[in-house]
Image (cartoon, rainbow, N blue to C red):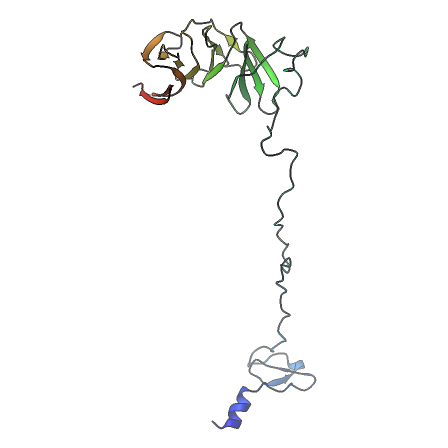
Length: 245
């Protein structure tokens, strides 16, 4: 191929006359003819899409801004128990009738939670943190254990025994008799059994009536956990695993 032919082949085609359009094949035809067998008219290319930041063409821009801060700060409780004033010292609506120091708590369902005070148990609604019902006893309650299998809350007083509370109806808890036990620091419950951290008296396994089923010696049993046939106890500086099967 000559240099001239090569130049002509690589050069852009001259514009068609007014009233004519260029086919994809490069031929000029009258615009009145529409398209022929050679193919559709080669229309002007579409304008470029602006892809600059913040512009996504026809689609809505994605908001990457962080969500606004809520009224809560990091670390704040979502619901403060006693916002109705019933837990306040001297409040007439206080379900305890006098000063109460909450010492332990557990959620028992999506709707209700339990908390223990110096003198008993209180049921609270988890949707608003408000008082639902209470059970009052003389022993100063320090620890709480929940047995979901029997709907029973076990309350421990450190040196004035333990007692169960039937919470099958959270709006009307029913307390059982106080059961004498050695001085203790913690309590756990599951499957109708109770585990008690009884200081130098060891770790005690009790039945649902508070009768001793087994015991393990300890220098200072301070904390316990129970799930099924697995028990954990803190003995001084040691964490001890027990299999109850």
